[in-house]
Image (cartoon, rainbow, N blue to C red; front, side, top):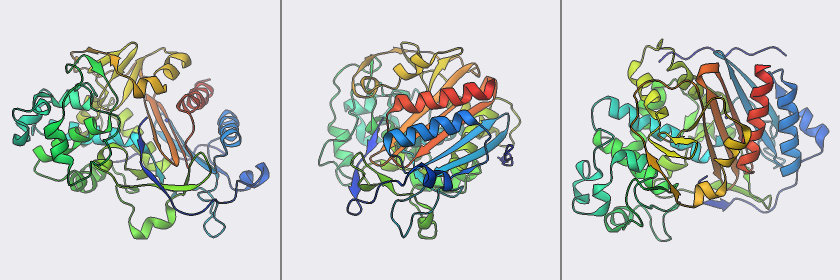
Length: 401
């Protein structure tokens, strides 16, 4: 699919495991140093105010923001990719961030792309793809229930001791806590299994299908499951709440649930592709239809509709409504859910978003197809979801006015 050129305008909760990389590093320099390390192509004073306030309040070393406005993408960068004196380069267009659970939107796109090709249906059971699941509770769960966290109570994280070698046994022996389709419980294992089975139905590994087919189809050349050696210099250092340097560790189904590293520019291009899917102008119609399928509401929790990874709200919506949908309770506690019958029609009059975190990074992506607006905010320190939503809301509100 052709990617729109990047036009610079005048002068958007599940946590992966982490490990410490070094001893405590020096803190940020003062505001003047941060300003010296900034590169702003978006002329948006509200953005500067919001991002600098977040950095000051939470001690965030670096932030990269992309605005999507009617097909144009502008980028503004703040602070540094690392506090280490030897690698403390300013955040720039090439800086790679861990995006945590925003990775799930890529898994959703892969699954919907495979489904568009006819390899499986969202109503198919897990056992129809993996015969070893036949006669087991996991085998009765549908692909759409796996993708919407409504399978019956998969936990947020895999239990201790589950690794790649024991992953299959974990699913074979899994026992639900409640009936499928009755509650939503946000879960890495649930959508991770969806991605694994989607790739399996295509006769491929998830990593190969993502890196060799899906990402190239989307025109993304700076998005990685594993950062290559020749790109390592661009990989930002993350910092935990104690300001210790951390990076995400490998784990079971990490690539499906929280493993992607990308730039604000590439993630903005992905958001733009999601918006463009409503225009019907892409050469790659299979991918366009796949992206639209990820936006459909398959389950509802209050005002929030759960798509395939993307969560959405009818426009006009409010900041309070969006923030209420990104609380710890929504991520950690089972929520009564109503399963929906998708219309199959495009749904442009909605706010779509996804938060993502690892131990050392915080990410947010949001877009409104009807307004042709979107935003990506990437930071190399984790901070509260509600504050990401508020910053994005206020930045887009200023852009509209």
